[in-house]
Image (tube, rainbow, N blue to C red; front, top):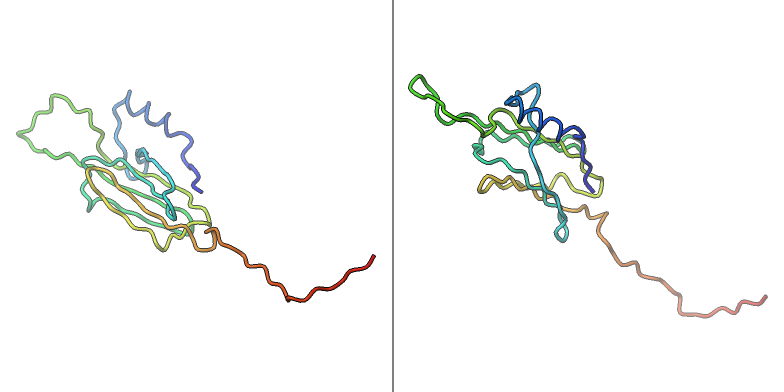
Length: 144
């Protein structure tokens, strides 16, 4: 139902880890996600610890879901002297192609404990259904 659209995610992560680079709006850092089906909906969970909910942007265009977020330093100024900074800052982004069997109009989003959870309902046309067999009640004899 979901397609990955970022084949170089692991390479980017390793490069950022060794070089210490942060994401920018032109080259955002990918964010990890989990996706699963629960009944009649798909659930996608994005790890975004320390991100202000106001800094999260979710867009759907056609069947492309785009999530962007920005984590800024909490403490800045002339009186702050950093000793160690391992938590990534900057812009994070992820795109997920939604299949036609999902209903992008019904997406809901919730942000709790650093996890952004999107719930996407399965479209009515994709749900299993029973098909009734019609019969006339009269028998016809077939001769060969």
